[in-house]
Image (cartoon, rainbow, N blue to C red; front, side):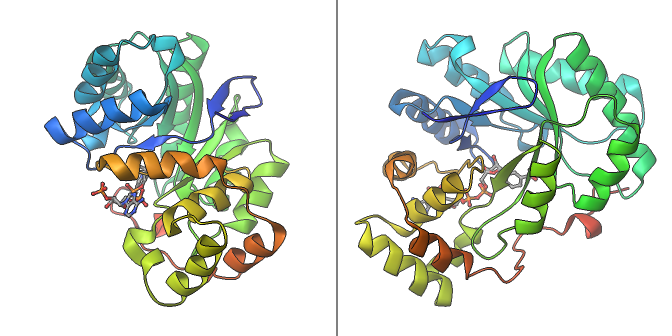
Length: 276
Ligand SMILES: NC(=O)c1ccc[n+]([C@@H]2O[C@H](COP(=O)([O-])OP(=O)(O)OC[C@H]3O[C@@H](n4cnc5c(N)ncnc54)[C@H](OP(=O)(O)O)[C@@H]3O)[C@@H](O)[C@H]2O)c1
């Protein structure tokens, strides 16, 4: 499995396993299956309500904790005490004494709130409770503001990214600052199977004897982006995993790049309900 390296030297498997809406018995079986077939990077969040299930699945897999890269995410909280409580609960639920990567889940509309939360994140990093820290759903203006006060810059930014929203300007910005880019929602809530997206992606998929989701994951990986598709369906978990072996050429990449329309299918971070 190919890895990306953060500026602090920590490595993260470039293909991960998303777990939003993967809960209870179905989620547990899916995570166990993902680990069995070779995924070593799990993406969760306190908000998903599945950290305990993930901790259980990791235990049941028999795989050493150090071999698995775990990302979790926390919302901004108004007090330090609440932030500590949230983080400590994640450790308890995931049944671990450290988290590989911890992210601010959504930016606040108030830069001071993000800066305040970031001080807490930096303290976790300095204490060795997390191996890396980052942000999610941050736009360039959120990052510009955060970097004014951050002592330790974020190592990664996880954002909505798929063929309809290729995030090229954000990728350029992050590259210049040595911050890794990670995608979520690669399948556009089903949009990749519709209209012009379907037509173009099906052409590329046919050429590689692959499926449309595989081509989308391969496109992200070829751009150096961390991808973490989610599925609770055994065949799809394997299908998505095998996307790492598909090599798209320049012409394929250009075709998929040409699908970008700045189309969001998730929430715009500037208008989220979590930005209080
Ligand atoms: N940071 C954030 O704010 C944020 C926001 C959203 C998501 N995320 C993370 O990113 C991960 C991925 O995003 P997502 O879960 O929203 O969406 P996604 O991975 O784009 O899509 C998941 C959906 O696609 C289906 N699917 C998966 N593989 C498929 C395949 N090979 N063929 C056909 N359908 C397939 C799944 O169905 P089944 O499960 O029924 O198979 C599920 O309905 C999340 O799980 C989460 O870890 C982060």
